[in-house]
Length: 425
Image 1 (tube, rainbow, N blue to C red):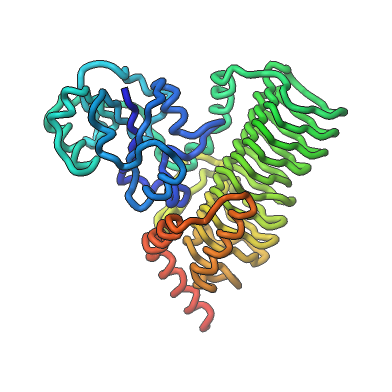
Image 2 (cartoon, rainbow, N blue to C red; image 1 turned 135 degrees about the vertical axis):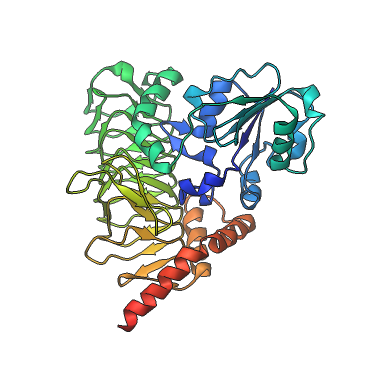
């Protein structure tokens, strides 16, 4: 049986700006990505992917598995699953009669298609094939819960770390721990992987949740790590106050105070400043003293504007910021509660909280959004930043980001016009 993960939903924009440059299944929650959780739940080692065409070539650079290949749907039994499905609730047997699981809107949540039935289906792409499957195979009402917004992942991440730690089944110290180091709580709730270096004067507090420090990570003196917490491979903590609930991806550099946040990977928050209840993409650099608010003064629930116009009530009193890939902030930037900061943005401090929405590729300078020095300058910076982590800025990535530039033009152009009017007053 082959697992097919699909990210073709019309609701992709609900996960912007984080999925502008990646499929939904690559988003993190807890210790692993949504895709890794679905694979573990199904028990599949044979996996193929279907995602928006503009992402396909870059994703092929990251995996040897089939990407947007219709041939992956034939020759064996397949289980097709929407990447938004919560893995813990995926109770669909991999084997059984062919059937199509539909939600209340009639959209395909999963499809189990036997090898024999696949021959009956037609379609030149995954959408056409699923339409054919809906018409030809038994339809069943599906109530599987799905992720709806990026902040849902951030809010669920602390509890998911605890579940993932238990599922991993690892505990103890396999790396190097230099003394004196303090461990609070049970040793059974701590795992320090091979290649990890814990410097002296570090506190690991597992009293309220487990702490998993992955291979090759390095924890510098005067760092405090509170569980539940996951520190990704090759990440470095530099005197950080790592509060509870953090999921930090690989190759990050983290200092200052961080609480209940998800950092996708390859991002820097070296310096002092507070990051709370945030989701940060890859290749982000937060300048010294960059801080976000994650709680309103009146303790009411936080609203977010994903498109810069329409407010969405998150239902939570704790939501900080959503920051897209390759965004850079200057020293002293202050993000408001529930801020959305697009990808490839340049943010300069104003001495007061910034607007709650800053578009992708926007240069926020002197309190207004401008075109700055253009996207080619941003690409040059991306190339330099990636080279520092021995990663490559490829022609496929530039083509993808050109497409993202077009996709995000509306809110950006409107913000630039507004900025021009403000400067003329």
